[in-house]
Length: 365
Image (cartoon, rainbow, N blue to C red; front, side):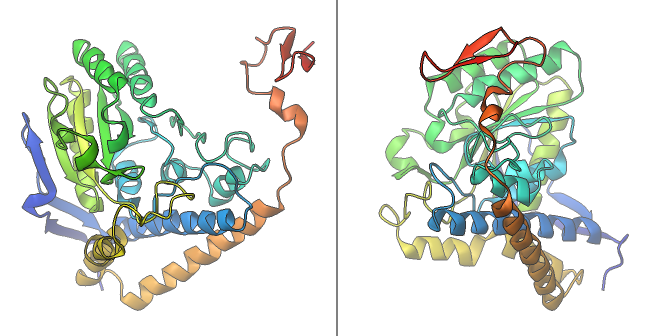
């Protein structure tokens, strides 16, 4: 069995990256037992939280929109493993894994989904509006977070900070005009931003081939270099993000990164996900490309842990998330007065703010 401090070396497959107008990152990976186990636990925790959310939605304890990321865990976990808390991330509405990786607890995420006061946004945001340190959501308007991400990167450059912003969006948002406007501004100012397209092959129920004249999303930047990454391999994601960050803080400007990934479920909980693709397709991805299974094989092959060890870790994470779910369900709904908070920075509020009805007025002072 590998010791905690022992370095483990392996080479990523040549197919891990495809490049556009840029040199590829190194395929040589150095890791250790501690990192492998941490990454395995992190991806398992994301999946367990999403499975809990699935059950709560079906039990009608979560209402409204709810977009799960089962199958895409390597993107959030691999990205966070390559960044520091001072780097910034903004994404769309399939955001639970990113919030968890940025420091929120399973309890806070599940409570938020149920609209409870213990939620990460105090029960006022729900699935699409979760926030954490240097994580700006969870955004419900398709593609709208991309120019916001460019703005965050502008602030980093203005303040001369040695950090990067990842502005994520899906293949379904890749044809939005505001995405290309953000590309243009980012290149004009050489902003330290990575435009990261999570390509899970389907924008809602429409395949990428039916919606996009070109599905090479990493080449969409034209005058901005690009990289296509195997988003199902956590070490391919980690290496690409490390490389992209280094490139950004060296002042080389923006980058378009396409992360080829997959979602096992539908677009949202209201979509069964099997009317526009076959069950056989989903099963094939699960059996050949599942990110947790791929990492599990690396761990076992390098004698870092046995399958029995990993199974025990799985049980512990399930227990952790089950307990978090119970605590989240026990949390009360936020008090009505809470809905007047977090509108303005403390001390800058006007005298009054009206509610949905003209007769519904809240007095701050």
